[in-house]
Length: 220
Image 1 (cartoon, rainbow, N blue to C red):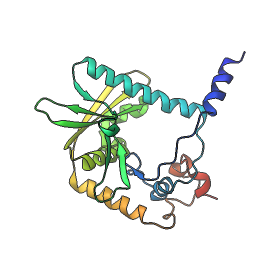
Image 2 (cartoon, rainbow, N blue to C red):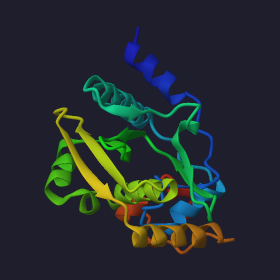
Image 3 (cartoon, rainbow, N blue to C red):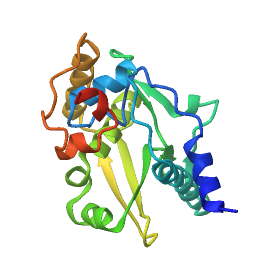
């Protein structure tokens, strides 16, 4: 019995995620507006490999594990559930700009913070520690700012785990109204486009294009 092949085949044949017909907080920080637009209109994505699907699933499982540890530490954690609409937030003026937060953390004094959890391999994790969140991954910074702007909360935290060593590192983030306004404007412009925005690069092997899930329909 080729156990590995059986498992890989099962992963590869697992159902696809439904297209997101909105501009998500997790994607608004992408550098390519065309890629954001493709996601918004429900364009067909390149199917991820079985290995990539597994990587995504491991990230989700680790997220839950870290929330378990936070609760074990007697921290006041609010997980997504039916009562809180799974921590769904949307912009009041641009309802197509929306997303789901990983969790909330209620600090002493009743300050509520948005919690976003990420995983990273050692080389990337080291950059987070050395450079800070925004310089490390602006898309993550934009995601957190989006949740803050949509929810009205004023502080958030990004907690990352090193997938190779299990080391943890976090950064607290204060709400930036000017930055969020720029994100809202970006979402408004992209959602109003009847045609795909300009390509970020005409070369399919450009580093952003080469790893884009819409590469095949963009570079034809």
